[in-house]
Image 1 (cartoon, rainbow, N blue to C red):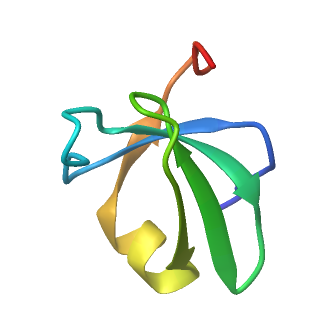
Image 2 (image 1 turned 90 degrees about the vertical axis):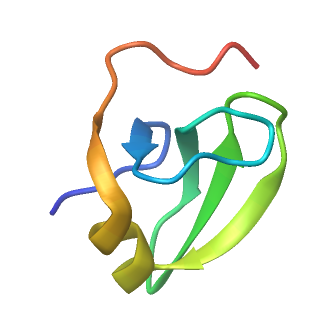
Image 3 (image 1 turned 45 degrees about the horizontal axis):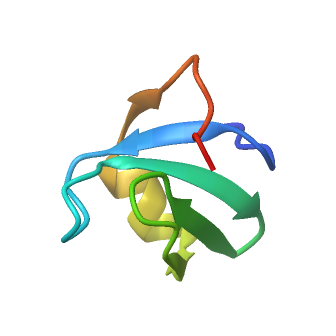
Amino acid sequence: MEFQVGQTIRLKKKHPCGANEWEILRVGMDFRLRCCGCGHQVMVSRKLVEKNFKGMTEKGCNR
């Protein structure tokens, strides 16, 4: 799968704030993602992102 910085992706599980869309801030063996709902940033392994990936979104985050 091709992931690029700036893309917005949808994951299977929701963040505790209720959003399931994330903006990619860093790509590599680990991803840095920003929640589009509350702005919280997390580091997640590539394996976990690929496993929970649900799809790309056309619109970006509102942040």
